[in-house]
Length: 477
Ligand SMILES: Cc1cc2nc3c(=O)[nH]c(=O)nc-3n(C[C@H](O)[C@H](O)[C@H](O)COP(=O)(O)OP(=O)(O)OC[C@H]3O[C@@H](n4cnc5c(N)ncnc54)[C@H](O)[C@@H]3O)c2cc1C
Image (cartoon, rainbow, N blue to C red; front, side, top):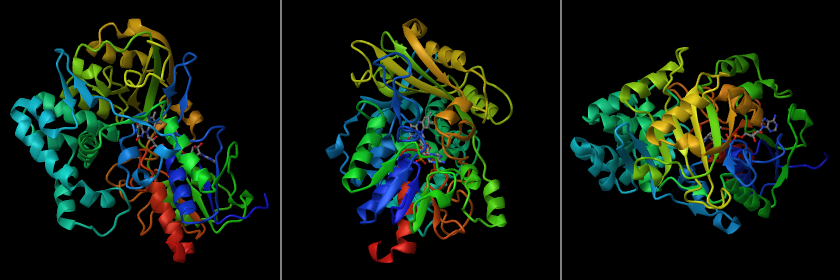
């Protein structure tokens, strides 16, 4: 290809798209090279069970799609995106048939927690109220705080483990399990430092923005991003696996929506050995085992709150959830894994044929595991929704290796582009002034292996694009 570009982006995941859009918005000539036959990386919707049943293979619930400081300013509705807000962002059922719901209203949520009502408000109200003052620091690379006091206050709550936080704030077992449900999205053991931060940020998103998803499937979010990108003049090339930087058309900057392991395999990067060694030490986190179901009926949850929630967290006691999230890091397997479940079709009738439904779920497993966790996941759902198994028309499962075939960035089933422990939370992939830069002044990383990590927020791509503008296109910054 003899065409010349200002910047070329490899990978059309949400971060690659965010980077490409921001550069294109600034008037640069850009193109995206994607190895798959369809765009979106881990944000894709496919009919993988029965005809007419649309399943989100990867990301499914996109609170950061509406909350991200970058995405929320894009005209995506004009490009076909329609958000659906479930009645309840998420809920957590218990074995006795009760459930706790995270409503957008903090007071209503707290009112369910008996002795912990006041503590819940003390925990969340200040964060939700001051979120706009701290979001840029939390969703970008390490930088000087815009509001140091507010960031410090958040840090006191976020830096401990989820276990320490729940023991400090809550008295009721159910309140603790409820918080664990969102903290366990971290894929870390619940006693790991900073595991609390995930629960705080995700629940803050639920209270401030809700936990919406795109009508028609997560892939519709990518369609809208691409439609906007193309309207700006951007170009996308599918089925173009990039293996050598020198094979790409001439450009001033190359941005890679890849994780370190893939970047190190790439030819033509001219990385020095010390950088290679440091990148080689990058840690990947636990994997996931994923199931998609086509259902004859909605999931028959005993509790009404669960029937009205977009997302349901399953884990029936504090000890069970701790063991589930510990076992995957300690060569053990839990028979009662923590399960994240989403049920789109209750709120979005485009997901399945008339009166039929879909469900999406995964549990955390050891990185690289090939074990089948379908039964354990279905058993967990059945405890909160007796009769669930009778509703199954068809299912598709993906172990960590199958997920990596679906998207080569999901190394060993790690859906977050690398472990999100305290050593890699803000300083990923390695500790250096700009995490997006590499020793090759033309090569940048824009994937979730850079801050702020996993999730469909595009902030890794946006920050990488800003660095490219600063380095190569100073006048356009
Ligand atoms: C099962 C699952 C459930 C999830 N659930 C949620 C959720 O509900 N909400 C949420 O916010 N997040 C969720 N996530 C995480 C979220 O999807 C990711 O954090 C996000 O997609 C990362 O975006 P990215 O652009 O960094 O990378 P990716 O989406 O991984 O995109 C990378 C792209 O690069 C391409 N690529 C790789 N190698 C090459 C190459 N050599 N040449 C060309 N192209 C290449 C890939 O094909 C891919 O398209 C989930 C992920 C998975 C897998």
